[in-house]
Each structure stands twice: as structure tokens, then as C-alpha cells.
Length: 325
Image 1 (cartoon, rainbow, N blue to C red):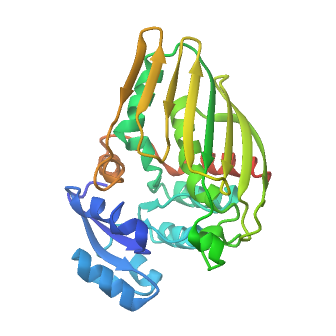
Image 2: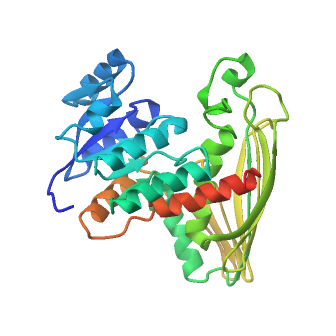
């Protein structure tokens, strides 16, 4: 795009858009949020008023086809991503989709092909690829600080929350919306990051089940894989453990890197030179650098690290772990 000002419309102005993403679009020079949509018109109006957005809709088609909207950010629950993304592609507009790209690899691939056919830019909000904390890990890997990378493993454990225990409806654990529950919502971030850090996955398998019986989605998943560069990997995600734990360890021939995907923790490098611990704070709006990279890509200055193509690969990894392929 050659426009000096790119006008965005947001579909689905829920929690993720309040601080993580919405303000990042508004504060990025050259971007402007001109319209938002939520099915509840009152909530859409409230969001627009609080965030200084000039227009709001309760109908997605109206926003997508608004001539004053140049690009669309889809921030609805994942079961509606494909429906809206295909409409955005049909309207001929660039799009950024909240992660995961879609509930399945097949849906993700269909979205990606629709944008590819029309030669339209497509991005997915795997914003960890743009965060300085994880770019430091990539720098250590790229400069061979731990020698030849041998293995990566991740354990993510969380106890059930109050909503889980209450039986209250939660779309994040509804198998019709997110078949693998919190794995869909959370593990996608880390697995996508691992592809960015270590290269694409070559082969993937896993086991998924529901141990607790608190909701319809899966709550206990294990996986193992092989990256194309020969690095092996394993992961365990369990949402019924006694306490929270979030630890990634990358083992090399000459050292180890440790970090957390979600917890506010140091990134740690241990090698023959000793140990280095760094705490690299995230920006106030965590999608800030992701959104700034959208601008660079749309203006032809730099390729964004999280595209429809990279996100389709992550969807394939997820479905492979879940045994859906």
C-alpha cells in the first residue's frame, strides 16, 4: 500500500483490544482506527466513545465494506475468523487476524489461499515474534551462544480458574469454538515462537484428552516434534495442575537458554562463559511492535515476521499435536 495514512476497522472489540492491541493501532504513526464493530451495538458504542473512534457498527459486513476502512483487524473468537476473513478478502482489503488463525489447519489454509489468490497482505497476531524479550533469545541462538541446538522443551501448567470450577460458559473451553481449549489460546503462541526461533517443524505428533471433566474442550496435551534443522522438541500443556508453571528450555552443545512464554521472567543464558540473566520488559501495549511492523510491511519497507503463511504452519503443528491430521 502506498497510502500515508492507513485507516483500520476492528471486528470484535473485546478484552484483547482494550489494552493489548487497540491502542497500539491508534498510537502507531500513519495508522488510524476509524471504525469498530461488536454484535452488541451498545457495547460497540461504549468502546468507540471510550477510545475516541468515530464510527461503530453491530454488523460486520457494514464495517468490512466501509469505503473509509482500508484494512481490517479481526479480534473475534476463533470460530468466526474464517467467516470474516473470507469476507475481508472478497472486499480486497489487507487483514490481521487474532491468533489462533482459525480452529483448524484446514480453515487456516482456506483463509491463507483466499488472500494469496487476491495478492492481499495477510497477518496473524503472533506478536511474540516482534517482542524484544524473545528477539534476545533469537539473537543468542543466531550467534551460537549455546553451540549447536539439540532440543527444546516447554512445560505449561495452570490450575483450573474460578470460571472453570463454576461451570459458567466460557468460549475458550467450548469445544465448538476452541476444540482444545486453553491449548488453542495459549500453546499456539509458544509453538509459533519456536518455529520463528528454530525454523519450521518437520514432523509432529501428540496426545490430547480431557482429564478433569470441567468443560468440553481438551485440558491435557502432550506433543513431540522434529524441526527441519534436526532439533528435537517436546511440550506438555496441562490446565489442571496444582500451581502455575511456564518454562521453556533450549539445550545446545555448549549451553542452555531458559525463558517463559507468558510469565514475567528473566531470559537466561548459561554457557561456558557463565550465566547471564536479563529482564526485558514488554511495552505498555504488548502488540506495539507487532503493529509497527504491520506498518513497515504495508509500506513495503520490511516483511512482517507473522504472516498468513507462517500462521498456517503453526495451525498445522497444533492440529498434528491434537491428532487431527
